[in-house]
Length: 154
Image (cartoon, rainbow, N blue to C red; front, side, top):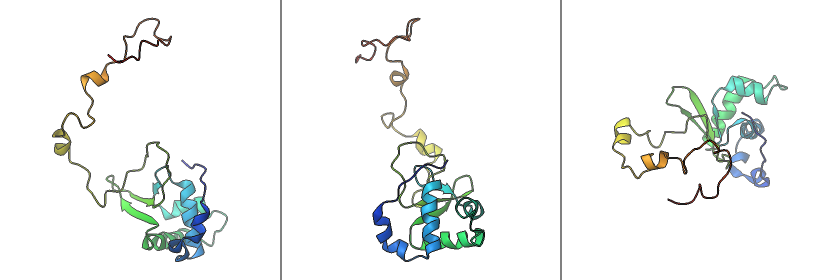
């Protein structure tokens, strides 16, 4: 889902952005408006051309593919295959929002942990325990009212 983004003034003094053509720079800035809060988006040049270049039909999917290749050469985007086999890209300057991404993360540097590795994880590594699953106070008919004693440590 597209969100409003802000481009920092320093972006116009970026040496890596200056090394790519203006069309690639515009595609990069457009990616920032289309990517999720973690800077990720599906790697589909035809879709990106429609989203970013709809009023410039002379710059279509082939031009966007070239832009993405040049941005990847300058390490401004990372293109990768997700675990689902689909192609994705990630910008090098993702947003700082804490919302969860719907696009899979890059696993190029470290493979996802296997299910056997997850099963061997110690219980204190963030796994839910019975205590963590208990409500902080007993639920009653009048639970809709907030009680200050409800959240006290047990």
